[in-house]
Length: 302
Image 1 (cartoon, helix red, strand yellow):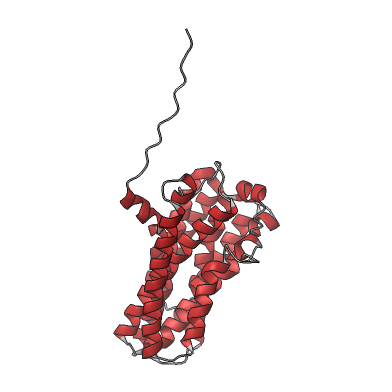
Image 2 (cartoon, helix red, strand yellow; image 1 turned 90 degrees about the vertical axis):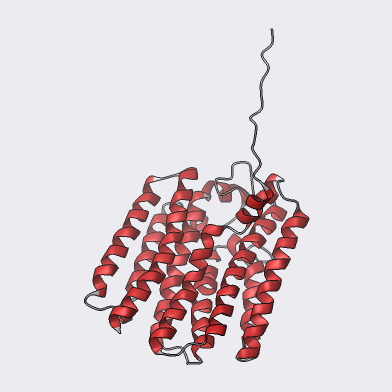
């Protein structure tokens, strides 16, 4: 009598969970961190525009969502997602959402970002249009276009610029109307380096898959052993760059944050494969905690 082999039953999440998963909710708090830091320093400087602050928050969230969806869609078009994928499930690659549905979600998020951006331009200066165009270009240039940044080892630089420098510096400017000083530049680089660690974990986890698909991330270019060293460097830089707002009491909280970072670093070295998704979540959490650390340091510095 022949044995019948049974295929494993794959449980497809509900549409609500699929749409939510498409936005990568874990990344949203980290994307907000740069704006939180800008808001905190604006309050510290004694100048604040609430309407512009809310618009900056909307832009930060929709830019992150647009970037997440665009990366899923463009990687799907390139055929970069393989059955060996270790990262979070991508609904479009698995056939759980159609390409039309994913593109629709991308268009909606881009429209919301554009409306908030135009409102911000009306409230401030038309020169911000160029910033908006650069952000929009960055969303698609990361995984698409004739020279996709993430496929040529430039993804880390893109994260530093578009999730650190641009949102922090320009949010501070439109909220306060004050020319950015050296301190806000330090804070912008700090959150940028911390955010870069999210991508480092992602590329470290996907090293073998990226190697096969020809995706030349910085980890593929310099070798898998480069990832932990790169992660440690970015993490320590993100802490050291906060020195303009250090104080005697504040240093206690810096030590606590350093210990948290070192714990996550040990995870990076201990885990492999899908277990690194846990480290990815903890790294995104660290970016958000960095913004809370900045708030505490500014309060103690006052």
